[in-house]
Each structure stands twice: as structure tokens, then as C-alpha cells.
Length: 204
Image (cartoon, rainbow, N blue to C red; front, side, top):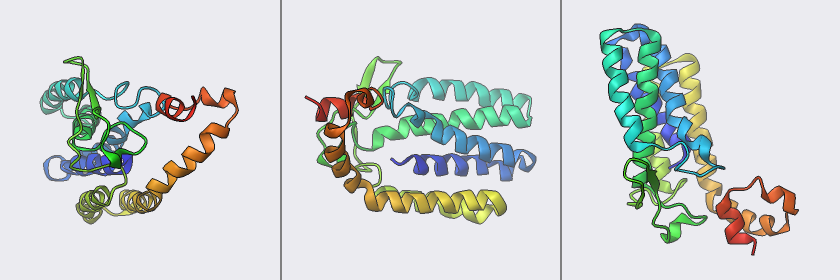
């Protein structure tokens, strides 16, 4: 799924604070946004393994929620929501496509790494690939209540995330073809900055 879809899911998760502890809602929404996006910072270094921890984030989130319930505060709530959003991101990646340049082909058996069991979780492909029409539809579904519940900067962020999602969905497959043309023509030093799967697929 797109990082924007994960971020919107985290923001919606944080929005629950409006009904439970509205004084902490701004921190919760910001933490949800950050936690929803955070795992994908490993895009260029062991994607869906280095910062994706479906089991460990979930366990840490349970502890953090307990701490926030006992000692409610902006930071305790923020940490709990951040971990919940990161856990949701990591776990939901198993519902998408695999780790391959053209995930719509359905050839990869790797969706997200489970460090607890020491193995890759296979993709279920309910969302066939990041930027797929169903991914965009999910982003819109997540964005609608978040946009309705907030105004000001939060609403602006939601609208911007939807706009980015729409543009990315339109060009998603074209980006792969551009990459296929470009990577073999790059100078060798530049290859060090590319994900391993790019180099292995295009550079023989």
C-alpha cells in the first residue's frame, strides 16, 4: 500500500482521541501520521524488513496503551498512537502485494518480514500493489472521516495526502518503465544508492 494510505490510517486512528480525550487529539493525530509513515523509511535499506515489525510494534503498543491509560498525557498518548499506527502499517502490508518491481504480476512471495518468527509473510494481495485502484479507494475511505472530523492544518494534510495518492496511482506503472530505462544507464557509483532489488533486476 502507498505510504499515504498508511499515514491516513494512522491519522484516523489518532482521531479516536477526539471522543476519548479531546485535549490530546492534536498530539494523537500527529503521532498517528508519523507512526503510519515511519516503517516505510526503510524503502532503500531492506524494505519491509528493517523498520517493519508487525509483532514487536504490536506488543510495544499494548504496553504503551496501558501506560497511557494509567498516566494520560500528551506524550504517553502520542507514543501509544505512534506504535499502534506503526503496528497497523507493518501488519497490513501482508494484505498487499509482494516485494517486486512489478507487484501486479504476483510473482513475489515476500510481503513483510516477521522478526518474531524469523520468516517472510506471504502477500495476500487484497490490495494488489501500491498505487492500485483499490489502494486509492482505501485511501479515500480513510480520508473521508478524518477530513470531516478536523479542520485547519489537519484537514489540509488529509487533502494533500489524497492528492498525492491520486497522482501516484496515475503514474505508478509508468514509473517502473522509466526505471527500467534509466537504471542500466546510470554510472556505477550511483548504483550504491539504489535498493538492491533495482540493481539485481537491471544490472547484470
